[in-house]
Each structure stands twice: as structure tokens, then as C-alpha cells.
Image (cartoon, rainbow, N blue to C red; front, top):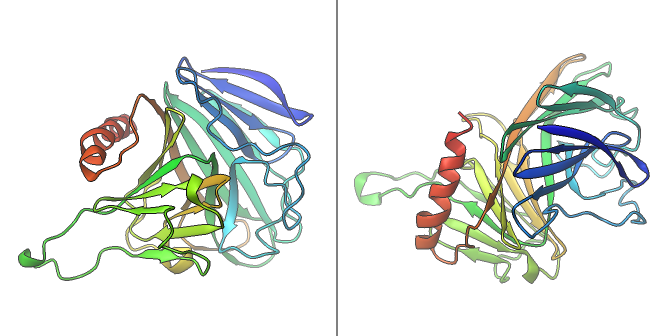
Length: 304
């Protein structure tokens, strides 16, 4: 892994790279990962990057890329600005970034970004309660991708004749979600998310998340993995994973379990990212199972 300095919107940032991928993390604001790209592909940065003159959204600069929030979402608590310089600690395989404590919430966000393989990034998200009373929240890891095509795998099918009589997951639509729109492509083994066809905000969550999702952007495939913890309590009617699109962006969002943080206590949520090249976008369940699943499976084995 190589590390060098760069600039982001007039502030400091670091470049982490391997022979296969490159990512950029901010040090003057955040913590954020604002760029991720495959060095073999032509897609460039697969993360959405908003212009430097963007307007604040509820007082918050979205910026693009990857960020850490705390769930459940609240119009004031969630949108606390992350505009201050970070504490930066260099690691053998990456960097640890810690922001100042949020004055309004008493919560402190930290993100550890490590390049653990040629095509793999490990991101550890931590929320710490620096306040005077307990706070219930969950780590919420949000990746803003360019408007590509997303795949959300569904849990394995059962067999009613063999006694599989109970449900094992639920899809969770938001109040503004319209499952009749062509954004949502419902297959037997996966839900396709055609972000380009979204003309308005759409969002969907899933319980019992199988652990991974994938997004195609101009030939590069971004894979995101985060293990769901059986029996844990999650926000948003039990959603472990959520996806959002409005046509301009495709978000992949994973959740850590809800935790009641006493003063001084922390909760942690880990994701792994992969960049795979040369995979076709699946249009059928057969293509999904014969091409994507084996490729992701081989990548996941390297995480263990």
C-alpha cells in the first residue's frame, strides 16, 4: 500500500493505493472517503462527487463518497456538520481518522480505512458517546455511488413442501417508495436497482441482509460487504441494509445494531469494499448465479 498527500476542495487529503485500486480520504473535514477507483478500469471514481459549490442540505455538506452517520435518521441530530479538521493517525495498512465531538449530540465519529488486499478495503466505523447521558443509536455507513446499476441479493429460497413455513426476511419500503417504478427490477434471487430510471427519491431496506451488494459503474463493479448479526436489533423496522436513489446517485447503506451507549462507551461497525473488473451486469437469475455470485464468493473467501 502506498500513501501520499493530495488536496480536496482546498483542504488536506490522503491517497491510498495498490496496483489495482486507489482511494482518497479527507483530513480537513469528515471523516470521508471521497474517491475509489479501479486502476484497470475506465470508470474512474465510482463514488459520486458533488461540486465544490454545492448548497448545504439541512445544514450539511453531502460532498459525495462515503460517510458515517448515526441512525435512526433525525432532521437535526443526523445532519450535524463534519467541517472541522480531523485527528489523523497513520497505520501500517491505512489511516485512522477521528473528528471532534459533535457539540449538539455528544457523539464522536471515527473511521479507520485499511487496504487489506490488492482489491480490498476494510472500513471500521466507530461511534463514541462523549456526552453526559446514555444515547441509543446505530452506526450508519453510507456510500454515495454514481448512478449505476445495483444488485441486492435475496436470502436463499426455502421449500414449502419440505416444511419451510415461516418468513426469513422482509423488504422495507419508505413512505415515498413506489415498487411499481422501473427502478426496481424484482428477480427470484436478487433485486436490481436501475438508478438511471429514478425520477424521484426511492428507498428500500431489507432485514436478514445476506451480507453483500454490488454496483456496476461503466465496467467496474463495486462490492460492499457487512455481516448482519443474527438476533440483533436494527433501526428502520429491522433493516440491516438500505439503498436509496433519486436518479443522480445510488446509495448503499449498511447498519450496525442499535446500542445504548453509556457515557464513554463505543460501538463499532465494519465494512469491506472490493473493486472487480470485467463482470457483466446480470439481467437474469442465471447470469446472477453463474457469474456474479462465484466472483463475489471468491473475493469473500479472501476476507477470512
